Each structure stands twice: as structure tokens, then as C-alpha cells.
Length: 353
Image: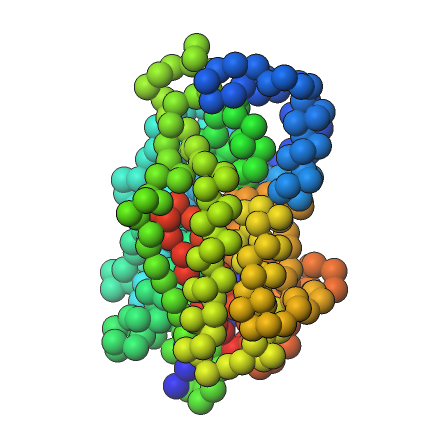
């Protein structure tokens, strides 16, 4: 028996926002003071660090649950299963449904319940619930689905990561250019295959000194409503933390899997920041005293930005469907999925495709 992804799908919003669209934005420092240079300089520095050239925002009439539903439908169609046979629908997100123009998050009922309703699944034994775990939420949901299957509680799970970060950013904060919207989903099944599938996992929460590296804070504009909060982060601390802890978690996971570093064909890492992701991969291979292989790390951040829990499943779907140049997967390929985010949470999965 093995636990495998038998279908995958994603939803990438149609609205593109290029870096040039931010040329007329008013960016302010955290103390409300103006930047000492023009926006073209700010944007050039931003692109050099993050690699982001454009990002996607969902249409005004849509919400997180809508994106999650479309990604789920595509994963179900890709797998060929009957949705009524699902045991669990697990949705990873962080901010719920935030309607366009609203400052209030709506999580009642849960996003998973909304997705189940949208999919018109009648089976009451198909249980839906949400996971709040920062950007690593989708990978953690896969780990939970695996636990249900190993415990004999499930045979088929729908695991979704969806987020609409464009609805919770402070437009006066230059970090707002990082964030985007999207959704990715996978069907996880207990199969009769003797080999492959999910081989190992690793998860950790660092909360003693690191809990508030990503948080909800007030606008950089002192004239804004002081009761409204937006996603905020301490980029330098996150960068230093990720470079120290993520490679170690990936190595620990790989060691437990029974596979070697030479077996790894692709690494799908959370699309947070190109410079940071490059540094993480270099440190990971340095732990094995090896250089980074060519094309081992697919990237989508240049065009899609950082959509939190949606980045890894969306990136995986794009590669599986042959939509990223010079990136492909073959049967029996060993891959690593890894993420880091608010909490501060880290996780990794070794999977044989």
C-alpha cells in the first residue's frame, strides 16, 4: 500500500499586476515617513531581491473559497474519482473569505464547508475542515491526510491551499508587492501500489523567539484606520531563520525517507522570495557537500508572486501539466516539497512520483 497524489489542479487568477503598476503608489516606511528615493528605484531593488516581475490578483467578485472550488474541481477531474467518495476535504488558508472592499475576514462556515457545498457533495461522511498553518499549510494538510490513511480513517482526501493576499495587504507597505492570489489542490489516495508516494515528512514550529516574524499590524500610513490590520513581516529575520532551519528540515526528511540526495530530481519550495529560495537550496546541497544540480528547483514567483499556501501546489500542477519551460516529472522521480511561513512553521515531504 502507498499514499499517492492521483490528481492535481490549480486556479491562477486572470488579473495581472506588473511591477510598473506600482510606479505611482505611495510607499511609506513603518514609521510613516517617505522613502528617500523614487518608486522606480524601490521597484528595481524589489525585483533584484524577490525575482517578482508580476503577480496575479483575483477578480472583484471572487473570494478564496471560489478559487479553492475551481482548483478542487480540476483536481477531481484529473484524478477521475467520484467526489462523493471523498473522506476529507482539508483546506489550508490563513485569512478566510475577504470580500472585495471589505476589511473583515469571513470563516463561518469554514472554507472547506463552502467548497464541499460548491462541489454539491451530499455525503455527510465527507468531513471538511480548515488548517491555519501559515504558508506551509498545504504541505501540512498532505501530512494530515497521510496520517488519516495510516490510521485507517480515510482512503481519499481532497487537500487544497488557497489564499487571496491582495485583500489583506497594506498598499502603503512596499512588501505588498510580494503577495498574490491563487489556489492549488490535490487528491490524496491510499493505493494498492507497493512503492512510491509519500515516503517521509518533517514538521516543526519555532515559536519561542520567532512567533511574530509574520503578523497582523496597522498600516504604514498614520492617517489610515488604526483598527484595521494588514499582513506584515520582518523580512530580514525571516530570511535568516529560513536559511538556518529549512535546509536542516529538508535533510532530516530526506534521511528518513531512505532515499539519497542523488535520487532527488526536483525540489518544490514555497515561492516566497527568489533570493531566499536560491540560498536555501544552496545550503541544503552544501549539507551534502554537493553543488546544486541544474534545473532542480522549478520557480513560478517571477510571474505569479507569493500566494502563500497556494504556491507549492500551483507550481507542482504547472510542472506536471508541462507549463513551465525545461521542467518535467517522470514516473518514479523523487521530489521534495518544502515550505516556511508564519508561526514560524517549517515542513517538508519526500515523495516518489
